[in-house]
Length: 295
Image (cartoon, rainbow, N blue to C red):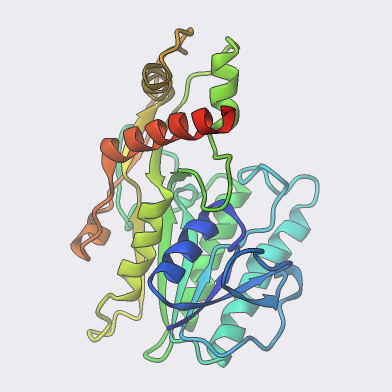
């Protein structure tokens, strides 16, 4: 299978790219620069300037998102027009080019930010209300709609509404909590936070599961939640302190409430995320990696 991947150099894209390569699939990275040291092909790509021609391929996985560095919500900075133009219009042009190139299945990485913030403890299913309050969520929802309108028997679309993604991206030393762990060990005040998380490898497996889903019943477009654990920052840092054998002040527990995503549709396809055990394994791996770097 030949797979086109946008955003392959990013945190999420690296997990997906690594999984595809490990399974023997051919991967072409659509991006601004090739991935050095990776056995991938390369095609110049920018969301702001999507070419009308893409390499022939079986699958497109669209992870790229143009935003201010380090930000998703609020990622428009002082240029909301450019933000919308790249991420909505650019995404639509990309889907059109992919269909023209013979792509049979497109996977779009969306976000839990598309859901309405009810301010209550609720279970969010794929049919829950989608009235995002951030421009980021609105842009992701527009991308979903752009894909939906193009899908047919020859061009299948799957949307993954992903929660926060943790884990050490393949080829990188740092991860989303690297700075948090450093500040914690340095005794800095840490703000309380409650969130939902999924490991990047589990997200990569989710991509494979939706690519293999049965579309013989005419379901050419489907949306899937991707979420695994509910995690309070106090619990995360308590586990990290135990693994590192350190003593530091923990943040207060976050008050909530928070909508919890139901990933039942994905689990019907055989998806089995790692849960708390995978989080613990990740923290222990962080400990071993840092110990190795000190030698």
